[in-house]
Image (cartoon, rainbow, N blue to C red):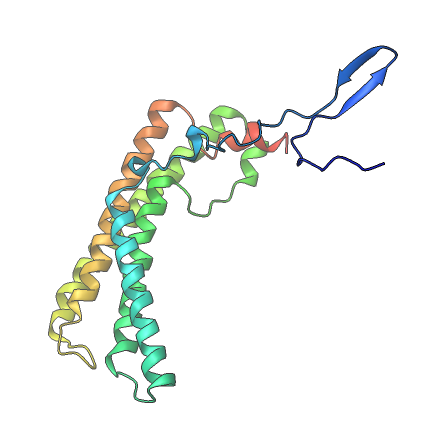
Length: 207
């Protein structure tokens, strides 16, 4: 006897129980129906701040220059002298501006395990102290970066005749942005009465 052709995975499977027929097919879409994404798949650009886009631009400039360095050195056998130095400076820019984005998201590394053993009020007090110390640290870094930027305006880059103060200006802006974002995070924690560190106590015990 010739078997009918197979019509794909969406063909319903049935089970006979006496005279009744039970459909045991999985909940699959009809044949030919389009597969669409959920609303959660939409990209929301509002979650990104100015420092994210600046870091994105620096990163792609770094990637292009590193590729140019590789291509001219290993393919053309005549490397461009300025690419290595500029790539190093762009990496500094990515680091300090990107650090500001990490402060805004509060994703820098924290020592969290101690909050598992602290009462809620004591944990929040310690978390507040961390926020204050972080603001002070970034503020001091901003002041020091300003001092270094002022001094380095007399020193020139090795290959390109630009003042080194350009690089330290980005470092200064990065520290200033980190200070501002740290203040915003501290205010948000104070208003909420909790922080990411204090929530570790509730979340960590169930992991």
